[in-house]
Length: 104
Image (cartoon, rainbow, N blue to C red; front, side, top):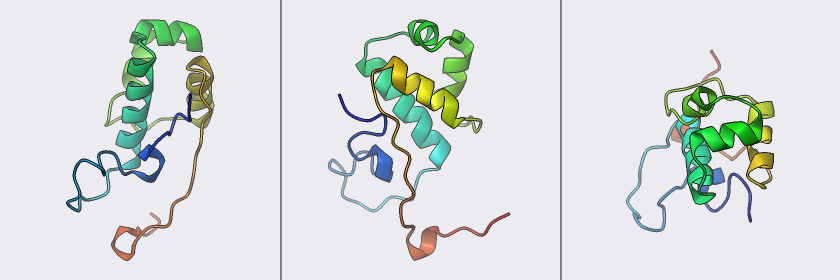
């Protein structure tokens, strides 16, 4: 099996092969939520089952899969990756001129 951020997900290009029209970049937290959901469902696990493998509770997994949740921690993502027999791959990808953001 591949990375938790496998295929084009690590570059924020979900669906790039199906739809070639330019789309605005998706916020990082929604990409992470989607990757967790997709990895879990590909493994045919319920949120409760994944929670047991990770050593947490089902509501924590539900929160992590929520596109609006912004509290993803690297340690929790590593635990999820291990539970799904995956390797966590975190990258910095060059932003285009319109994607640059100013630090708050």
